Amino acid sequence: LKLICVGGARRRAGARRSQMRLPEALVVRAYWAKVGAGAGQYAIAAVGCAVALNELRRWLKQVRQARKDRVHEAGLKLVREQLPSVSLVEGLSTAVEDARAVAERLAASVDKLVEILDAAGCGLQEAFNDACMEDQSEEDARFVEDFLSGWREVGIATAAYRSRLVEASIELRDATRFLEEERRSCVREAEELNTAIAQAELVAKKRSKPRGPFSRLTRGKRPTEEEDRAFQEQLDVQREMTNAGLQRIAARLEELRAQAAKTTMRSVDLMRRPARHVGEKLLNLRAEGTIGPRTKTPTGDFITRMLSTITTADGRKKLREAEEAEEAERAASAPVQAQVQMTSPPAEQTKDGDWVIRGVYKHQVLKAGLRLLDESWPTADLFEFPQSGVQGAKGLMKEQLFHALLSGSIRLQSIPANDVAAAQRDLQKLSLRQLLRLRVLHIDFTPSGCGSDTVTSVGNTQEAFMTMLDGRLFRLLGQRAGGGNLAGLEDDLHRLGVEAVLFVAASTSVTSSRPWCWWLTEDRHIFFDPARFESHAQFPSDEGGVHEVVDYSKRDKHEPTGRLVWFHWRGLSVGREGG
Image 1 (cartoon, rainbow, N blue to C red):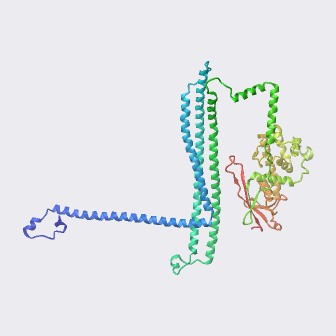
Image 2 (spheres, one colour):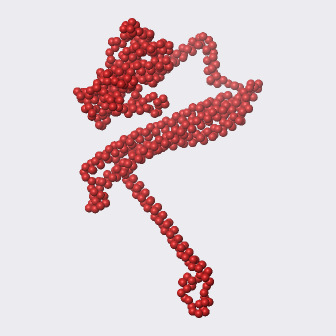
Image 3 (tube, rainbow, N blue to C red):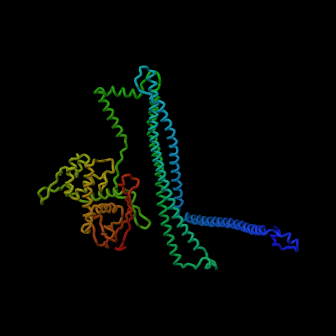
């Protein structure tokens, strides 16, 4: 094989050469063996190169990622220096996560408690299932049966408590899942804002670096002053938008943190209440499970005295007097809280000179506006009702009832349902002034027919009466406020009446007495004067301008009925028409 590998260069002459000649098959096989050995070496080398290239590619990827992380951290450091809201969002996110972890730990502990109570409840019921409460002649047998039946009742109460814990655990896990989804959404949105502003800050830092003699080759053409100024203005706008977005996210995270704490405390309270039933069953075992002569408990003594008292007339009279005295003492010792009525919604002054009204519900602002109108409008014709036969008009069926309501001598809650139903058709004949006074006297109910928002509730008939009253009142208010400028908007008079009352309430929170730009539709507006409660189509140039409002009101998502709306108006002053 060695001779073949070197090509057979050492051939010998004569017989020795013929003696050294190998078979042809062996020569071919040895040749291909050499070729295979070389190909194997090349393959091993190629595999080694591929492994080395993969390692190099992985190392370069790690280097790029590390460089990107360093750049991102540098950008976030600049953002934290410029915007304190970043740290606030991070802290609130951690607080929400901690609150969610507490809720998760409570849910896990409740699951363990459910397993324990399941075994205990089922075991007690199975162990003492044959215990009965039949009358026993012997004292000891009766006490034994009482004792065993008491433990069976403990098992039943434990099983019921276990079912309640399962429901509470499911509700708690659903709440924690919702909190985690909301937190991740807020964190993801904050990261997007931080990444965008961090890139902008890095670009600004790069543009502010001093330029050397070769900067044109590496950093391109130097920007002009106009370009630098425009870039700085754009960066400032982006900072303000990012700060506003982060503050909004921080407010949402604060709500989530409070909601998580409230959910946890509420769940503990709901789990604790049914446990009292189990405790009462155990207390019954302690009170009645002692063997020996049966003694009267304090509760039995109280019941015995109560029965002996109510069996006689004098005893019942003394009992009533004692209850009345106790009730009077409790009423005298209870603190009296005066109901404070809002006269004007709270307003805040912004840095730009604009104003914002928020922090109250829409129905509260409506109530304030209705009170202001009732106080400012005259009452000379308040008790003048339409009479039968005068210009073909028909009188009121319940004139005396409306007279008593308008004078305040009676309230709607004290009127029988039949009389209230009969008086509904008379609402169409009352004047705007009478409807307004009637509504203000029953201001405890949410304006615009949303039912009662206080503890002073009424029945369905009275609520239907108030709904009809609101419908006619706000339609007449819208018609009077718009005057002759509401052509084609007859179907929107109720909405326009509500908006006019809101303008009246908001005008008390703004120092300037300018009219208001009232957008009836998206492309149609008039100018409303709350003091005169009238509108004009022409721009009031002699008043120094008008107020214009952007409505950000939204429903309260934490209120189950969906009727409560947070009032949020942002206003600005416009000095000229078209401005």
